[in-house]
Length: 225
Image 1 (cartoon, rainbow, N blue to C red):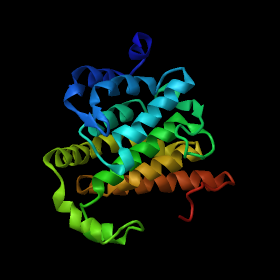
Image 2 (image 1 turned 30 degrees about the horizontal axis):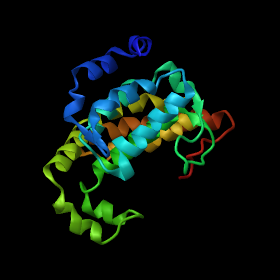
Image 3 (image 1 turned 180 degrees about the vertical axis):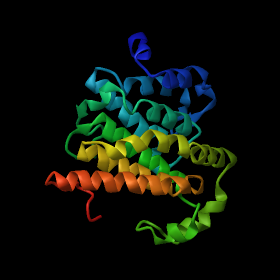
Image 4 (image 1 turned 60 degrees about the horizontal axis):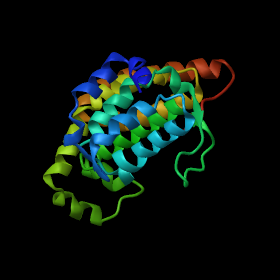
């Protein structure tokens, strides 16, 4: 663990030290166990990384639900996106994940996109009703959130500028898969009112990326979507 901590960016180390993890909660209880999981995301042990990714999916963001631990965990994930271990590939980390192997970085970008989608839900009722998974009873339950749930939601909305700043560089990645997953995270982040001024720059980055890719004779997987 000491070796892992020393290899983390300063921002990530600061988050680990200064966050009162015991005061936060995830789907299964106290957030006191989350720092170990977060550090394991950059472990050299493939099994430890897989378990850490599973903890993000099943505990920190359980079925799209936000918890008070979600925001600080997401900031940590954003801080380690460019860690060298992000290049390591892994297979599905939960039994129902049958996708082909992908890099840790792609998995983390995808997870941040899911956090952004959950944070954006309820912000624009018209947009929510247009979503493929919207059900009429969703609107009936919006006003039933308890104070802790509302605090978790607001915390995740507040950190969206920081998350976007971490995701944006990967929109220009030469790796089509990373570029695609970065786009999947950027789109829900850019739906935040506070990020409206970032949309033109993001569009320019994507146009430049598309132009460079098509000039090379290949088409990125998100073209035409």
